[in-house]
Length: 68
Image 1 (cartoon, rainbow, N blue to C red):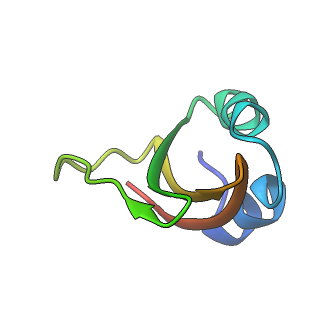
Image 2 (cartoon, rainbow, N blue to C red):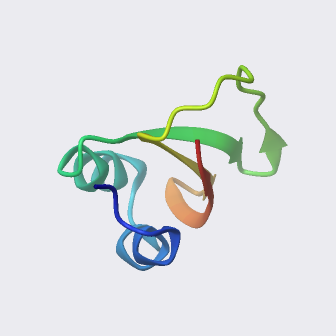
């Protein structure tokens, strides 16, 4: 069972992208950057319950936006 969105937000906040990916991998999840340094990234429209969508600024996770 995957952790809640709130738990993921707490665990990944202010972590580097590599650290966040490592933490996510401990839950069998991956990280997808949806926005980096103000530039929007577009993902495909498939839903994956094992993927965490994040916003990154200066290589730090500033927001966990969703799971999917």
